Amino acid sequence: NQYRLQYRHYYPRDIRNSSDSIHYVSSPRPKPISHYDTLLVDINTADTSRLQQLRGIGPVFATRIVRYRTSLGGFASVDQLLEVYGMSYDRFSDIAPHIVASPSNISKIPINSASLDQLRNHPYLDYHQARAIIEYRKKLGPIQNQDDLLKINLIDYPTARKISPYIQYNP
Image 1 (cartoon, rainbow, N blue to C red):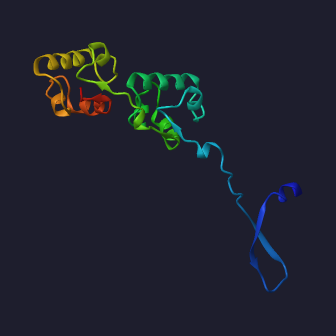
Image 2 (image 1 turned 120 degrees about the vertical axis):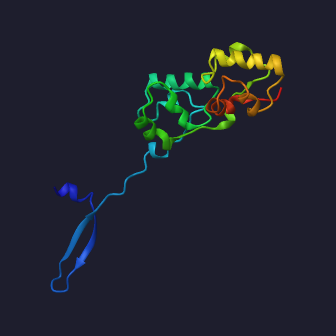
Image 3 (image 1 turned 135 degrees about the vertical axis):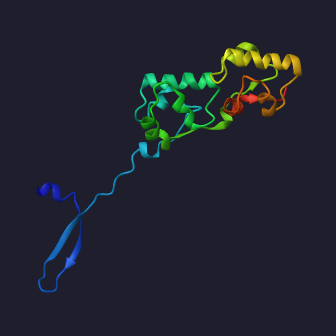
């Protein structure tokens, strides 16, 4: 017990005039700043070992994140981590303060010259949507903006909005 006392911090709580005694109350020890508290990981440039520094991310999950990032062309938002297989909202909310997604690292698909395979390999487009983009280009010419993309029947507004960070409209 006397060894524990030397590590506690004390401050005077009350000095009573009637006696010469001082009553002390222990104050909470200041929490040291750990490496994890200051950890910030860019999910667009981090390798699997860097991702594993985040609590709740092991080697398998880090590999899933990197694979999904590669298939997407990069993360436009940290919220896209919720699309990675197995990512729960609880796990995401634990790591969210420690992650950023730099948009400069996103690789864009040139929509007016991309092949069918390039388009359909993107997670936000299926085969039929990719084929419809190719057909639109053949019949009506290059796609200039998101409004032209919305003229394709198989592409709705949520899909167009999701793929917009990954599309390059200029030829």
